[in-house]
Length: 101
Image (cartoon, rainbow, N blue to C red; front, side, top):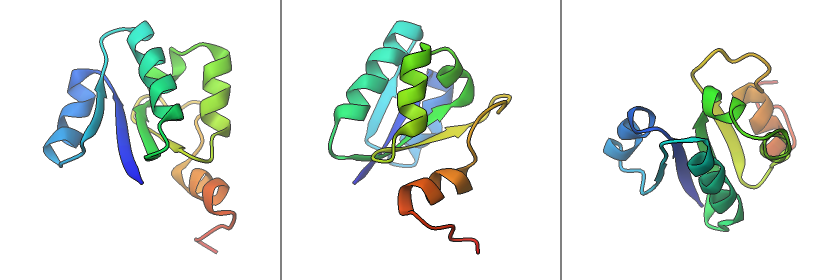
């Protein structure tokens, strides 16, 4: 399973430097939406990393799909974080148990 990163240039650059190969660099909401759909359907992707603000800009139905996705698991970083699911909750959803208990 691979890690995929979706976002604007300033968000994805660090991941690229860290050696992440599946990077979807986007410039607008349409590009983000297209990249998300592509990553969700890519069977080799296990985790999708996105900025909270980019997730917030997506249509409601696609945000719902991301929030409910177990495979791949979606991890939101940065931004205001309002209404976002914590990494702990996403791991619990993906694995089925709370690893911190």
